[in-house]
Length: 455
Image (cartoon, one colour):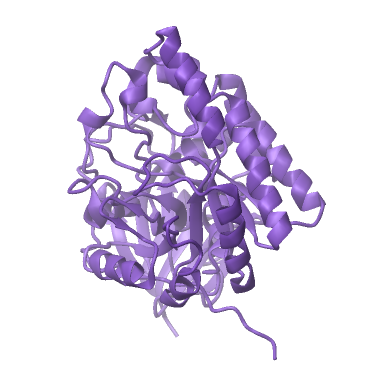
């Protein structure tokens, strides 16, 4: 038979790199990965040195954090442009905390007609209701749960205190889903914030001073110990410190499911250069750390102690990120359009194998959210989600492509040696160069494979 699509180039798999390899697609699925003369196909691309990777799964996206701002129409457009073929959206939506089956359905119905790439959803809890609705959200198709040890907002982004966190973990444990937690100790952060305010420091230094490393590390012990106590897979959704990855490794050594996610900003930006230069536009929780810590995190990637790489993408309007008082700015940055090229750049600069790109941005996220029956690999029978990068050097400018709701980005001005030239979602081409071809509604809601219960 003739395949629908064949791509030949450098095929990047989680375990090896196949130079002069090819990927063949039939009926929206990966049919074959091979080496040598590529087979016949209705559409055939001989791409030379181009990198062919599985489409990325971004484990942490906030499409609806700011009302009437980004929404799925834009977040999934940025994703498609960046070779991200599935996003996992966070539950802290302004005006709709995703904490019930009804809220999950409302979000699916809202996102479906807009989405240009596939999407999965996180659920969370309303502290006033406790763990009562976890089971119904599992039935509604959430791929994981998200909590926070720090309260950013009592309604939209509430703190979950230790006893309630334990109750939630205990309710999730039998489902096999993962409990992801924002790792900042509430009491410690508030104390350090008051100290910074009392000191009179308001410039770029204020944010790092208000959230020193101990605030993250205390919370991580709480999260992993709660997982150990309940048998629930526990996951820290972002860690800016090498020490945090060592803590997780120690729990894994002791037999517990304890994982950590690294955001692309912690592998790219540093405090003494980028935060100093960008101010509020580089304000993120937890904070961007000094350059020495950035290099430590790349070592953790090389050692295999990073489980996922994500963006924690949020596109705040510019007025929410430009206050001279650093602590008054909203926290978070966009990154969907540029995560994959930034990771490739960073890995190549440090001699780190690109196999980690396929593992940390595709294979492991698919496993993490129990989507690996259809997503995350260039393997036979999986969805033909593919991204191609070519050695076309470019200086990143978020406003140039027209694929972002905002024109600012902390990554503006960064030189990228490899850029996304095309992407496919379930065998359909969704982007070509910087032009997004996918129409709204092309994406689908994807849900985890139900856990098999043995009789």
